[in-house]
Image (tube, rainbow, N blue to C red; front, top):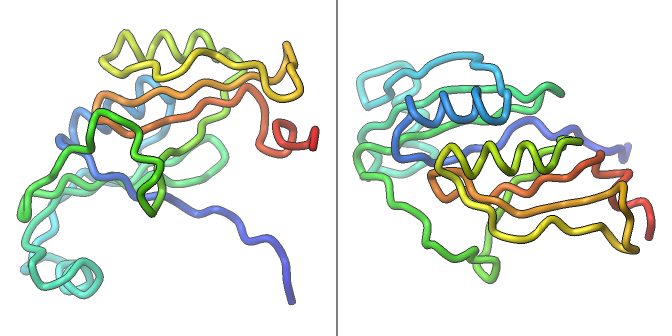
Length: 162
């Protein structure tokens, strides 16, 4: 049987789990589900982490957060091996996920809060195609370099013009 699957969660590496939890809670409004807690070879989940991440994994901190629609954000602070920050430029040409998208009808307000909290606005606020005063989007980055797109409406509404 073929049917659409639901999106469960996304994992994001950050340099400081405490600051990231506070930022994703205070700026994006996500709820803390569990953590932060530490995982290493001796803790529950340590064997699983080694299996998934590889034998060079030694230690990290994790926290689980949720958006209003139940989609999870899994935050990882890698300690050993250490966290490596992304580059300043949006590396869209590299494989993998290069942004996550948040829906907020107050696109100007959220963009302002992101910038005031240490993030960056990467693009102007665009009217979606064909130009629509109602449907708008913008690219920003959190203070840790994660690219965040903001839509004013749901994905279906934003893409439904095609």
